[in-house]
Image (cartoon, rainbow, N blue to C red; front, side, top):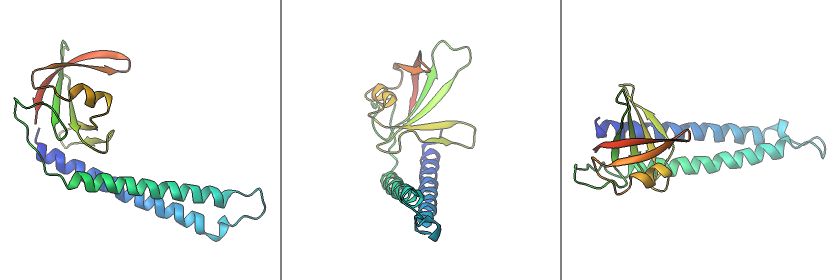
Length: 164
């Protein structure tokens, strides 16, 4: 796995999410300020609801912008096999005792937890924050360590195969 390629894919996904949020906020603003949003009687709440939606969308734009700027302002940090996992690490896990080598990739990020990025080779990288359950499990571990992750209520043992 090429960490620079992963980093660029994450930035691209965050930028796309930011642009989509701006578009949605503009749509909500247009709906809230259109002539059709003017209340016809005291029970007509369409305009009020549209203004709440516009406010929520504007908050989402700010959050997406913050994530994009925060991530793109940090340089890619490379880890060695003797380095502990911390924010900025790209971690490859292999399922222990699996008939097929099932691998998972996680990028520990200070922001945008929950984002999933598809790479050209069909693999996915999941962004996790240090405060998430997966992040808490990985922080401080090293290549070769085993970790226990829950998936759909089932605990699965993984080996940390690489820390980039």
